[in-house]
Length: 287
Image (cartoon, rainbow, N blue to C red):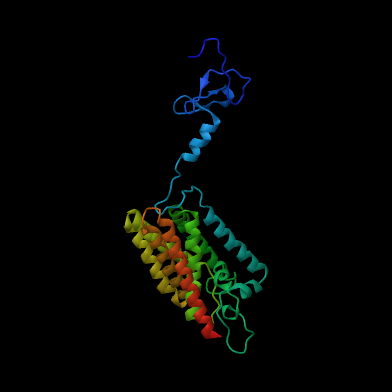
């Protein structure tokens, strides 16, 4: 038992007298080291340890919860920057648009001639302001759709899974274009956005949301797919829709245990391999 004359000091500041103990480690702490706790005060080290031991909130598919849709902002920013580059230099579209091959007699270029990056870069380009069916409305409509859908889906998936969904959907759209219409220039984020739309539907069902509004949205998305077939690349839309739906199903219905991230990653890798093999087979046929 301590004597009443015993002087106790802060364990972090030995020259400062202290008579208050940390409620967690019971060491003496001075006013400068006191941190408010649910009961009494804790020392800085115990506060840090407690913060590390708190389990971070997770989304329904296992992603980290984030309040700011950072990935959606970045994707919109990249699309806008690419569009500005098109306006400044028209050759940007020719250099980076999705193209499988060119008719015989033209200078060889495109995915069929080694420019594999076009499978993704084409998904960040849009019709120039004065060209195509929609002109500047092409990027405006796509970015508005990405803004409305992306924020919701990113919050439900978490950032890493959302990036995987978006890029795989973009790639899926480009690969279907390559398989069906390899001689046609194709640009636009529509394939990726259709994939995000498919994920919105799958996750709404998984979360038990009111499906009335969600079903109307999906019906409108499919109706636009049909109506726009003669005006836009329905192949890119359909490829993105199917790929995004497959990725979302894997994310939403993987078992909720330690196997979940491995199964989700495995499905993404399997889809990536399938898309690459399909693209390679088509390129082999073209060349």
